[in-house]
Length: 79
Image (cartoon, rainbow, N blue to C red):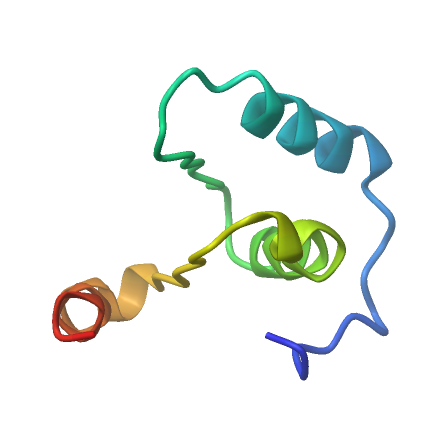
């Protein structure tokens, strides 16, 4: 994720703030969020930006791509 390009990203401060708020108010020991929308709207970039800013606050971060979800989940299970 450190190499994920953010150069063409349009700032989405409101969305980032909502994401931060959702994680902070989670009562679960496992914090999780789903970001969804049409292709090209900046979902992956928003997630990458969040992880760059706040990833150090988590012991584990998993990136699951909808196109390769089965392989991604299998890789996580094997870690």
